[in-house]
Length: 66
Image (cartoon, rainbow, N blue to C red):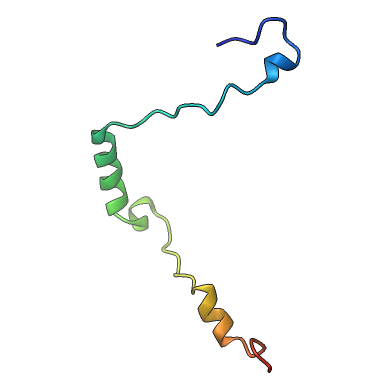
């Protein structure tokens, strides 16, 4: 799809969101195999789990000084 005839602002007008390709089922299976190995398979360090914000707020000494 080329620019709008005449150019200008019409050429810059949105034609809507792009349609993303949908991977086939076998590609999802390949992705599942890759992810099942975990980060060490790809030489990534495991990251510690971050505590939920609610837990951090409850532990804060200034949370409720009443």
